[in-house]
Image 1: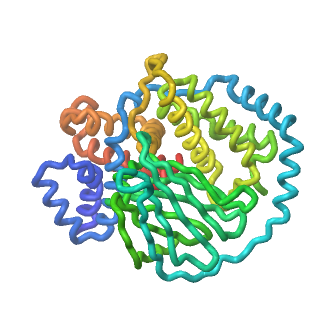
Image 2: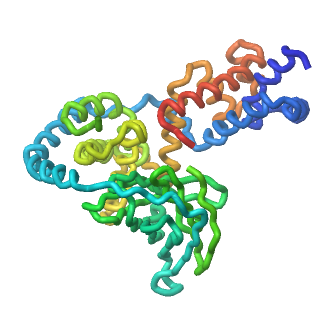
Image 3: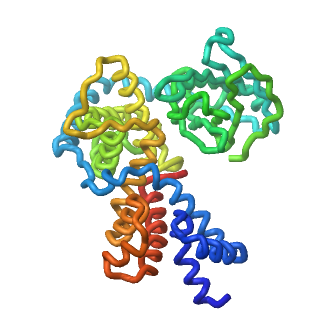
Length: 236
Length: 168
């Protein structure tokens, strides 16, 4: 293979990723890719982008981008100024109270997670409770998942983390695609419950995960009652 | 220092990100009035929670989009419990799940940002499914040029997607 050949093949990788090459060219390029780690790596990247294209609506691409009305910024500033005047005292009090929240170190243990999935309200109820067991000492993570037309509603119950820990929650489908369900900060002062949502249907959810303090805890989601143990913690 | 605790921070954040936030809000709510409401609520919530924003964990854009996402979900719920009103100004509401609507908007926005030559070739060959030879003839360039524009177009699209916060 000469450098020129490689360059020519490389320029065809986009058409290859989009499935646009005629069969003979496709076969020849496939043979080149087989023996070319550089093209293989590049193809993976291009395929990732190519897979997203069908989501886009060409009519929206060709229409000019929408812009917010010119006075929206001023309206927001006015609203914030009004809220600021109203809530200034409350905010200050709250900040003082936060000052007393000492941090407790998260025990860096837990090699394994045992997860118990308990259906709520009998088999007719579609909501399910997922309990993360064997998490580090003093920490408890539970979730109630409820299906909705918009996706899945998730109530997270977290206890025992250092106040202020950022918790990011996600669902994962059977194909391993991750759907964010948003994030919250764990605060003692504000209780340990967070209401979140994800666009993924509960019936499509295979796992629920919580990323906090540099660790990711993953628990399987099941449409039926199940006792699952030994799921590994995925490193952050 | 945490951002958005002062009104001036909100003004700066608005100047930097309101266009994108509004674009996604219109895309997902399908209504410019609701989109304005959503962006307004987003900045209000951001300001109220400003102490919790930590620039070391994620970009301000990511944080604002996460808030907007929750606002849109809340508005969708509120709307579902109200009688249906027709879409205004001919903007079709997005019917995909919100995550998908966000990625769709990101791809559309990224497509608008890449070079004209690249966008045109991707639109003609991919979205309109026209043969490369036909597009080449129309543009008066060799077919190989179309192929290389598809290649460089996808690469540019990838960079543009990262710029606007796609993290898939």
